[in-house]
Amino acid sequence: MAKVSAVQKNNKKRALVKQYAGRRAALKEIIKNRDLPIEERFKAQLKLSELPRNSSKIRVRNRCEVSGRPRGVYRKLKMSRIAIRDLGNLGKIPGIVKSSW
Image 1 (tube, rainbow, N blue to C red):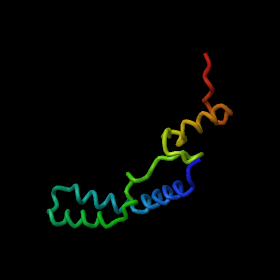
Image 2 (cartoon, rainbow, N blue to C red):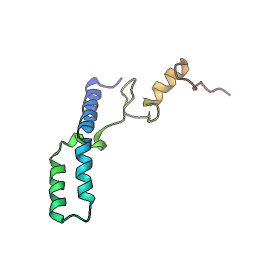
Image 3 (cartoon, one colour):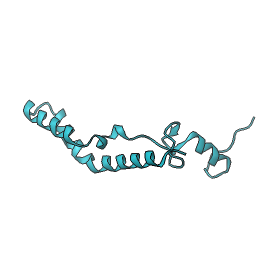
Image 4 (cartoon, rainbow, N blue to C red):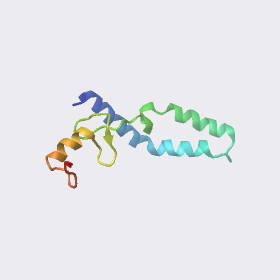
């Protein structure tokens, strides 16, 4: 089980990303637009740097929904390999069975 504080911190980052997504996208479009004058693009760059760091999508960590584990997380199921194995053995995930040969 992961530290509760680490999971909560990651959830706060997710909320910030959602809150600032529109603003960040608009500023990035201005910055990437080569037709605009350099001064306007530079001002957009400064505004982007004034936004909170944790509002950037790259700072969010993929964590297991069950245990909060940060490593070995399958994106499709949003669960760690250990949680998948445990729930798969109990028959709680459809389509996953323990292999035997």
